[in-house]
Length: 613
Image (cartoon, rainbow, N blue to C red; front, side, top):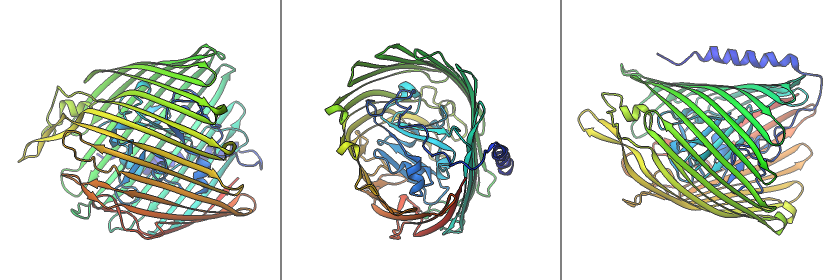
């Protein structure tokens, strides 16, 4: 059995985008990429001013990333403090994210309100080829967030929202070509027509990468439609997905070539009632399916499919001018099929309060209860405080919270003959804290922040081999881990035409029992960039990414050398919305590996054109 046909899904997506084109009105300026203001939604699941929220949350500016020609979601996330990204070498390879040192399956992706990953169903292949097309919000919320988001949100949450259409019709068509026989094309369309808002995107990426037998091809698509039924009722829906084919050569130390085919599809529908400033209610239904097929020319080809159905009812109540309550009920049904089918169901209830007892003080508190049919229940909580000084130029903030990560049915009940059952398997659990300061200087032209954090994890899941002959084993709760560190960020507008930014993370992540460091969590990570408007329509910039002091290894942590990469880019706007682009990646041609055995791409050059209408 193989995943659904890529051509069929891509064709449907292209048809959906084409259907939007007749709605386009005449020659208006294209809408800006960032149309939702500067508020964040991940910290409380409602729009909130980031200047006062206690949580450590960052919103990526998609317009800035577009100007810097950063099209990869993984690369964009790697610019933020507290975020480590490790890819298996090339474009399309499995890519993991570690938030504050939490493992990759303890860092949760939430797309259009839907939890994407579990301990069994990963995002690794999806992230390896994911781009930023069709998005208008990317937020990263750090620290234990299970109180609002449930299982897997132990290190934090990465929230993605499909673009909402707005205003006059506009769109873009872009094409790029470069090293490793790489080509990339995309089309986007968005706007409004009467009571309807719409958006759509479709993109294709094709590359040979640098190693032999390492090609990658993927389609990414998205769509959104929102309609105002009445002044108080809004309904809508989204679709989003990826179809990918990756030639996996295996690590250089043990080549094991094979074909990986993946199909990821997500669809949501919602109805939102606005009862005025005191009450808002939203009902969301979603369907998510992830298919993975691995074929390396032997009879034991592997196929896995996960399907989830989600129904959530969220309510926001302004109890007083200084108090807002957010509460909801979340149901999820999950089916996992890989050498045998398993199912699970969960029901959760949560309540969170945001209080403003004084003008410059915000307090938050929340509680959540999750109940799984297979692994029982988990209760989590979170509190936080933020206080503004010097007329808002200084923010002091602190939070404390707990998190959990539920094992999946196949881990608990097994998939014989290789994965044996362990009915006593318990969820992973954690508690974490942070405190820090955000500072604005020179009327906001210069901003700086520093946050100290720590996490303690227990009952971590690990594979334990019980039969050395057949390699059969089971999942067990054995490990503990601690992570602690410091996150710092700096941004400045040096002149009207020149800006600079930098972020730094110090991370100490280890097993407190053995003293061994956790793999793929570098102790030092620095990312910096400089951008200048050289002339009217002419933009140029560059960036540097440094990683130092890290370990990796299949059987035991071993030192893995650090690395520094640099990139430069430039673009020139011609008349009538045409932009020419050029960028150089790994311009120092450094040889390095983010994951042992998988060399990263060397020096590469890409050029392209974008047409906005």
